[in-house]
Amino acid sequence: METRKHSLSASLLILWSIISILPCKSDARDIKENKAPGESNNKLDWFHEAKFGLFIHWGLYAVPAGAWEGKTGYGEWIQYGAGIPGAVYEKFASQFNPSNFNAEEWVSVAKNAGMKYIVITSKHHEGFCMYDSKLTDYDIVDATPYKKDPMKELAAECRRQGIKLCFYYSVKDWHHENYPIEYTYFSKAHPDGFLGFPEKNKPDYRKYFSYMQDQVKELLTNYGPVGIIWFDWYGSALNPGQTENRAMAKQLVDSIHKWQPSCLINNRLGGIGADYGTPEQEIPDGVQKQAFEVCMTLNNHWGYNKNDNNWKRTDEVIYNICDIASKGGNYLLNIGPTALGEFPEKSKEILKGVGKWMQMNGEAIYNTTSSRVSVRWNPDVEMITRKPGTYYLHIFKYPEDNRVYLNDFKENVKTVYFLADKEKQPLKFDIHPEGIMIHVPDEPVDEINTVIVVKY
Ligand code: GLC
Image (cartoon, rainbow, N blue to C red; front, side):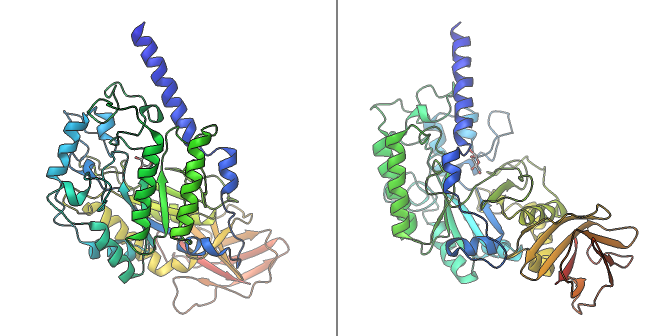
């Protein structure tokens, strides 16, 4: 009976936590609208232009690298999933020495892939700070043999290479004595919370919130301009109805706007102050009205997992970039570096291939807006991106009959050419009452996605 009660309450809590992360109606209202071609909405301009960013999940979980007591399927949730007591987990800090961390290399990998911004975990749910926080000793400078602040180096290098640095910050904190257990998933392995030390005091969310506020201030005042503060997630702490908690979050948003007026905020602070939405591991159907950024893993895990070899292919990543851009969104693609501070070789290899395509075809991605005009499905003009006066047709399946149709296309077309063709040699096209038919040669110019530029 006791077990049944336990598992029922566990399921309810999990369900509640899942529901709580879905943006509710009032959250969605805050999110900014996607812009029409040529339009500006200032604060989000760089974000809309950028289209492609690098997510980095890096923390103490890189030490066990996804494996614990014979099981190998863990990632950044390993403390929770494997039921590792807080006192044991904390010890990973003394083994964390990322002596091969090289900010220049990391930023170059992103830049050469065609990415325009980096979002890195300053603190994940484990509560360990990957930057020098004066508010706790549970951070990379005070608790590890590395003793340095990698975020300082990363910030300097991002500035040097013209990449925007953004910070992920977890609202949920399994290490803070004032983070209430009822705001996170129930875990049988951690009946007293995740701290490893039983709650001595009654957790006080107000105290926790002021810690969080002070940490966000550190991040926004010590590292130069920050593109996004990427909150993740709040469990049930900021659900509608949590009036006092939500009021504190609102105050935090106001402070963020004061500390760095141009810093964007995602929708995972209970949706409060949200500039854009964050679908995770899935691409929404159809053109979206509101600004969004799809975050996705490159294999199956966010944090480093040494046994996970289920990598996405380069062409899949390119497909996703184009699909998301054609719907008006950004793609935030993740790497989980090792405890030594290295990007897995395979991640670098995939991104190199992506960079090759982006270098040639970036014009069809950056600063474009969404557009799907109705097209006949021979061949697959699956996606279209747009700029004022230009349509970019993304051809993943090259037509066997050498024809590309654009139906319901009433613009006055001036010229059509392959984006990858430096000479911009015009392609022949016929005008029909219902649209245009473009004649293409036998061979595609790009084996993954041949982009056709239609100027009107
Ligand atoms: C989820 C996971 C978290 C990960 C995040 C990325 O919320 O809890 O581990 O960082 O997704 O979007």
